Image (cartoon, rainbow, N blue to C red; front, side, top):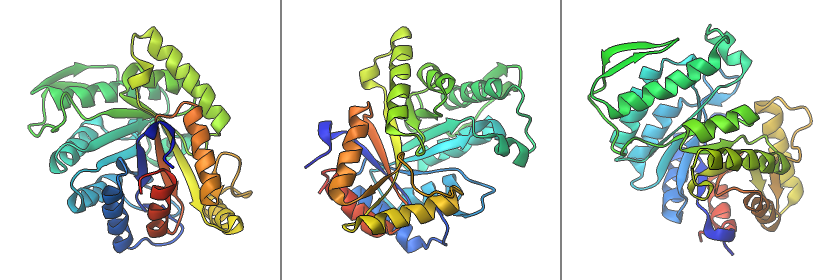
Length: 306
């Protein structure tokens, strides 16, 4: 049985883990996700991390090389701690080498990101907005003159342009109401964080839809995604323990899994994913926390791809 409405479902690549990740696992998940019909492959950006993590642009470029059709997304690049010209060039390159399969997710990040990279938190929303504007301009214009509060460009350009026109989709992340409204204004899609509950997600979807309608944008065609940290096993206690361990180490959450996370038997997981669709998701990103080669097969069956 397929997830209702047959919405697209993305698969997380193995990319952030308490344990080292071998490249054979990354390749298998990428190839099997494409063969089974998942819509896209996703990673996060976690640079100065306390666990094993890949650079998103590099690992997505690797995935592009071992696949042919599946889309490739990052959710999210913490845009204000980067120069947007570098981000524009990196993900234009990913789109070019993948023949038009890139999705760039961007967000504000958290306070520690600014401390780690010695970027002031002041005016971070302005920095973010200008960054998105510069990326779009560099992707679509031969030469860019830009004079913002934070960034200035005079006749700058990138010769290599993305394959997707007018440009690769830019999805925004973040659950704060202001972040959700920014997604409606600046973005081509929105992805809710894995740590948000189904009830919290539903409230954010309502804010998003109201803002889209105010702007004259069609909520029905705007991608509304939910990252879902999960573990599936016929033995529910095994699934719970796997998720508890991952969240305790990666997210440093003493209590392990909470109501926001999905775990249990295949039928239990299907029901929980259906609840997110009922809450307004028209795209799901399933993010297994271990046993990735097993999970890609199990989740394909759960969501109706096999």
